[in-house]
Image 1 (tube, helix red, strand yellow):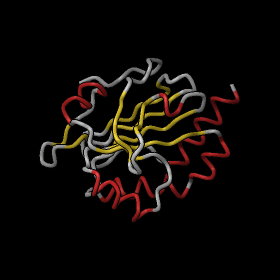
Image 2 (cartoon, one colour):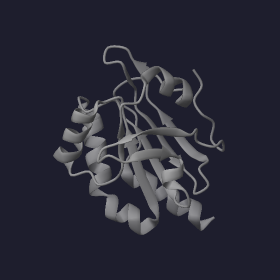
Image 3 (cartoon, helix red, strand yellow):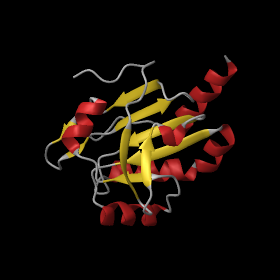
Image 4 (tube, one colour):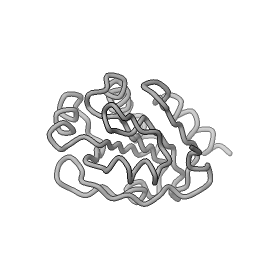
Length: 157
């Protein structure tokens, strides 16, 4: 498997969002640096920790001009419970098809849970991929401080 290449446009994806709206990527993040977190599911303790970290850092992300979105194969009930548990205020998509999205994102699949393995992306304001981080298991994902540092460095260039 080879992941999506840096410098290429993030593929178009449409899905339901917790709260009833549609989430359209990369359009949701147009004009700002953006983080896209494809997470394993609400059952994953490491994913819950990562999403909670991004929520805790959200004010700093907003002040730096960085948008955050996330999605999984979770059904609406589980996605909504996870959002409520962590007080997530950034867009969370749910119900994506594991086969279609793994092909589109070139992500690994967790066969035991029929979900994507963590696949995280930092996008430029024009929707191109600045950084792609793929995990083939439960570890290996973006952290808020690293994202903020990278965006600051890009803006200073």
